[in-house]
Length: 131
Ligand SMILES: [Zn+2]
Ligand SMILES: [Zn+2]
Image (cartoon, rainbow, N blue to C red):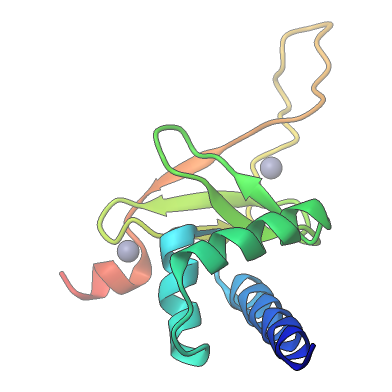
C-alpha cells in the first residue's frame, strides 16, 4: 500500500511537471522536446512515462495535438487563443505567433470563410543571431 501511495504521488508530480513544461513553451513541443526539458526537473523520467502522461493530458482535454505536414506530433495547451505556428528550418522548433492576416477582403463573391490554417516557415530569431 505504501508503495502505491508513493507511486501515485510520483505520477501526480510527473504529470504536473510535464503540463508545466508544455504551458511554459513558446510553441507546441514534440515528445522528444518535452522529454528533454522534463529531465531537468524530474530525475530519471523515461520516454514511456512522457508518452503516458501526454495521453492522460490529452484525454483530460488540458492539451491538444498539433500535426504539421511531414512532422511528428507536437502538443500545446488547449487554452491558447487564435494563433499560428512558425517552423524554424534550422533548429526545427515550432513557435506560436499571434499575427493573423485574416479576415481576407477579397474572397470570391458568394464565398464565406469558416476557418483557416497557416504555417509559417523560416528562421527564428535565435538562429538568425547565430548566422
Ligand atoms: Zn531556430
Ligand atoms: Zn489566423
